Amino acid sequence: MNTKLRVTIIGAGLGGLVAAIASKRAGFEVRGFEQAKAFGEVGAGIQLGPNAVKVLRALDLEQGLFEFGAQPRNHVARSWKSGRELFRSPTRDACVEQFGSPFFQVQRSDLHQHLHGALPDDTFLLNKKMTGFTQSENSVVARFDDGTEVESDVLVGADGIHSTVRNELLGAGKPRYTGVICWRGQVDASRLPSDLIPPDSLNWMGPGGCVVHYFVRPGRLVNWIAHRQVDVWADESWSRPGDKNELLEAFTGWHPSLLQMFEATETCFKWALFDRDPLPTWTKGRVTLLGDSAHPMLPFFAQGGAMAMEDGYVLARALARNPDPIAGLQAYEALRKERSTRVQLSSRARADSIQTTSRLAQVKRDIGFKVDQWLRPAGAIRRADWIYGYDATAVSA
Image (tube, rainbow, N blue to C red; front, side):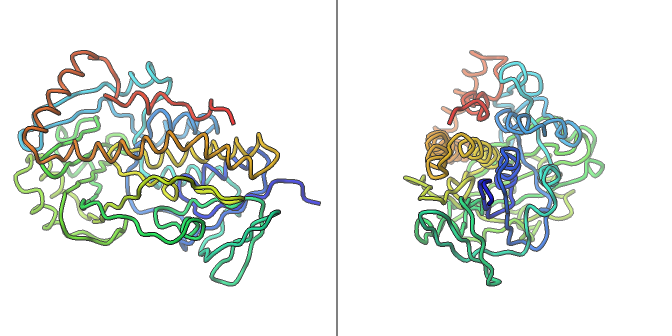
């Protein structure tokens, strides 16, 4: 008779992978299903604050970050047109000193491969699209479009903002278009002047938009994301090709270094930002959600991946500490809901501040930056201490 807790995970993104690794380490029987036909993601960067790195440290996976990740020297904000510095927060050394863990910026595919390598090859099955589930008092059964069914004790929806598990659990609903279009791209540093991109994380703030860029492979590969407020709706896709001429037109008048970086980029992609309001609950019976399935994050605190990874770790710990899996899922949500909601809403509010078109609001914001820097000249990551100082591995279930 099988006495191991059986955990089924839908979705092999960062949150799903961390949930699988932590669940395996807890001794559970883990089966994962991913609708994509192959692992690996198109080139995109991701920021891992100290809170995310602490999760990987607890899973003995931190060391790999030093091998492929970049550590920004500072976080710097600049004015969109003049390049005037709005604030500078020390990062590389200050995060270790203040939060007990480094800050990394990495190629998402490198991180995905690193996490996937910590699991047995057969943990996740590919090309498996879940169509629904049925739960009873003693189990939950997931159904797939190829006609197969999988029974387990717990079902976890880690399948993103358009989550099938969420729709089945809480009713169908569509994400809200935020009015922001994004372009993203990567450029080999050899295609740029040597002094164009410093080893910092830069955020260029302008009316109705912002541009963020940073290294994801130290000194070699630059990742950039450009946000622009527009009225028209666009498809949400990480892989839709973008028109570079359209990008350059959207950022006409912005700083020459940004336009030079865009010009040097061979391929860019375009997508729309979508959002959802916080949920009153994301757990029912033996089924729960994590990451963007539960609380999709706008990117303005760069915490989407980190929140999913925190979720995955806390979920496994809550299940390990509660013999009843239903109680374990309830404990998981109780531990995660307040924090994830706060980050979700703070990310939404920060978008308004960064991209404001009001000249008065810009002046008030920039004066606030200067006051903060005067009060805390060595403070790491301005106004984000509450995010980066958190340790999901220390919470109790």
